[in-house]
Image 1 (cartoon, rainbow, N blue to C red):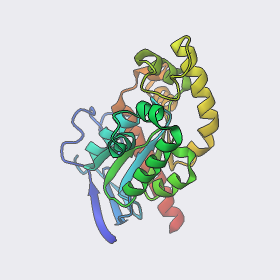
Image 2 (image 1 turned 30 degrees about the horizontal axis):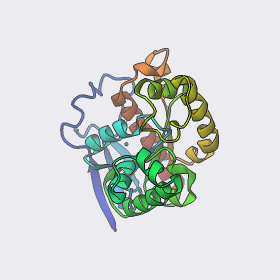
Image 3 (image 1 turned 30 degrees about the vertical axis):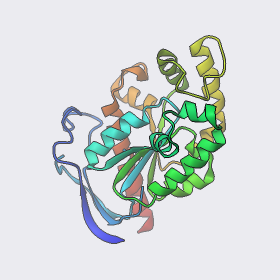
Image 4 (image 1 turned 90 degrees about the horizontal axis):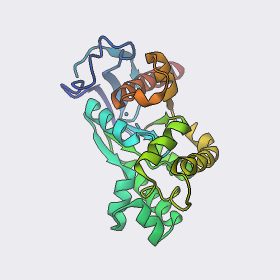
Length: 253
């Protein structure tokens, strides 16, 4: 469906994100001229336009390792853009009638979960104006990229040390790929996350935009990423998408 539309942020959506006009990272595009609705981030007032007509999908898909904050950031992006938000893990749980991913792994298998995850992403790929937070392992299946690339994809790149500390603090019971071994929670999480990232890093690099939390921390003068707010990460995601879409339009033209 082709249409020339102005994609505007939801009125008042910047409330709670601080003052974008004063932030060094907040020169955020809040209106895109869109030529085509395709499908499915990851990621107020009309301050400025990108200044180019961009042929893009009206959806975003944040990807990243488990515990990277995809759901939290995705919800902020959906609120700012006035889109619907979906968590693909939650949709799989609902589809199979089981209350958690960990239980799906236990009662069935990882392959069973991945099959249903692909079906969920396929169904979402026919929808418009939504933000989807994918599971951390969704990137490993090429078929999933064929669905995700119908929209724009954002990789939330969080240092493994920070991920391991975050996961160890809340426990690994909800993380089936981390919950099989005994031992120190941090050491166990860090070792497994390192192995998983080595398997997946090339796949994550397929994303249209990479949001590096280390880069945001440096820009804001922080010594580590733990002090970053989800809003700061969401703003960076919007900036990265502006850059990607503008470059894409320039190449096309």
